[in-house]
Length: 113
Length: 113
Image 1 (tube, rainbow over the protein chains, first blue to last red):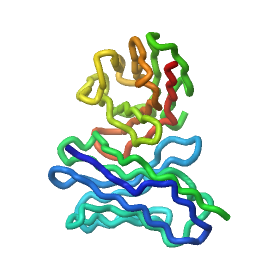
Image 2: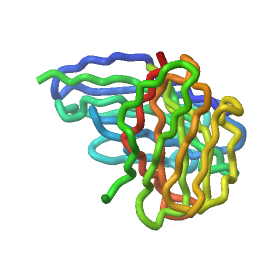
Image 3: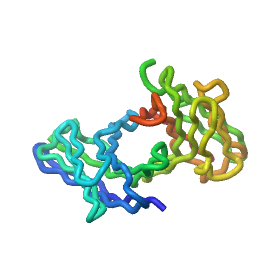
Image 4: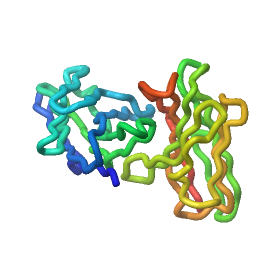
């Protein structure tokens, strides 16, 4: 079956630090890959996505590249802000059942001023 | 409202009670999803509706869980004879069509004592 494994948290950083959250996946076929973010008190929001190998998703300064050879989709941001404090979830969906998302356990990121 | 609305925001139930959780999707959205998120875990897929048709209920953990969307808009997730292991945040999401971006509600936090 499908599964997503992401870096355990919590992660605490200072403002302007570099952030990486590792994510690897197991899936049949070629899934679409996503990063979702959950800010305190809010619902899950799509941050970025990639639908095929070597695609790079980007949004709000965050980037992730779909690496088929390493089955990875690591999230990076070069200079974090306090407002980036949130829980980040890596997820995938199959090509055939694209309505069904499989999520990782989430990584809590806290950015200190 | 502009987003997916879920009610109640919090629900406390005694073991053995029945509960009903409501989801108001974004108006006109065809697809509706329910997920269960246990503490410290990522969301797990429960069920999927396209209009009023329940196309996938493979994630419902037992026959105590039942979901409906009789008029293709509002959906209710019902849990009968609640157990402590049902304690979780229940997330609803909707999508305009049969593919594309999903929008999540803030969830209902269910605590079974």
